[in-house]
Image (cartoon, rainbow, N blue to C red; front, side, top):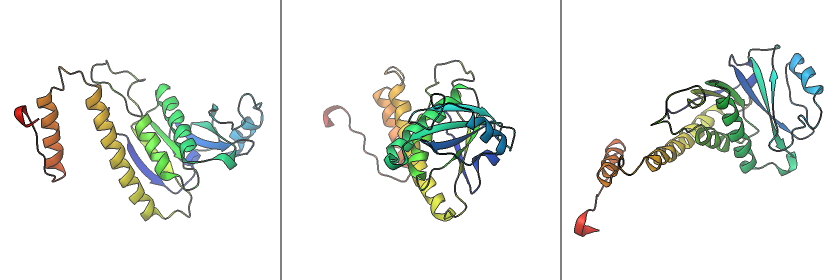
Length: 212
């Protein structure tokens, strides 16, 4: 699948001009939402949405730029960790893609930028090589990561570049692993290794026959 473009914005997710903005909510807490969306949020029962772990709720949004808000539960704030951020982000990305939206914004929780990027890129991966294109397999093309205004953007961009490189490498390997053996033969796999080595100025040694 095509790589998702990521950008950083020191602004609220709901202020982005996107089809859907993701807002993470810890259990029993009230997130900062536009007035109209906040009024709708207050009408939800706890069974509908309380911020519990794995809960998702899509709200129409008439109070700011984003057309919809996807509320994503994080569970109890005292139990919040990087793995829960990854899981919640992955659930949000999959839900957005399943609805056919190719652009979104996401409010990064506290200082959890790296796990958020990891989950977004890994969850957005689709193996589509032999599938007919449709809205539900395309994935998200552009995700805006909304960080606090006090964020050190230089450091955040470095985190983005570093984490994105690792995730794109992982997805590249996933793509090769998903291809059938009659497509990725040993010779083809060796060619991929040589191409990567040339791109990143690495030494590549391919063993064959008696050398194995």
